[in-house]
Image (cartoon, rainbow, N blue to C red; front, side, top):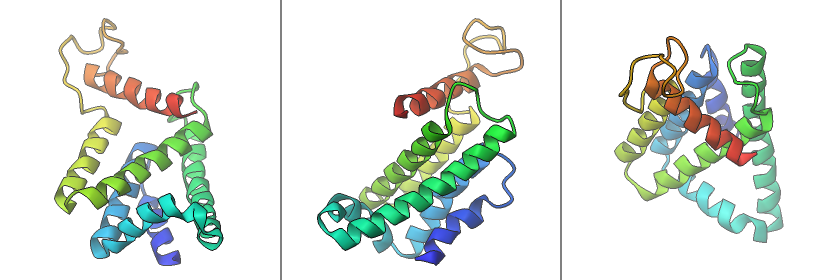
Length: 168
């Protein structure tokens, strides 16, 4: 459905950086499935059963390619803007985006909307570098931080990078 596929695109429009876009996509998906919870259930079950049905598999493949292209465009722009570390690839980050959003879709089927939204908020904290507490001096290098970087931010960055690298 073009209306559904267009909402994540619309959600990232106007967001100035990849971290904000990475949160905007699951927020848009949350809104879509809040309006129609059956979409999340169908999405999860179709991914599990779809490969057995040629027409559904073709549709899923088309949808997956479109979402991958969407993520790829976001990541390529962020690389051009100097937002990402050099040791990750476009494919790694685009795949990570796919996995994050698929995981959140599965979670939405399993829990109530408030809990699902709290998971998105935790993801936002991870992306922003505010999920982990600091227990050392800010930016002293003793815990992997660089000057001006909070220890929690360094931990979030390392975890986020590890997720991306582990995917590729």
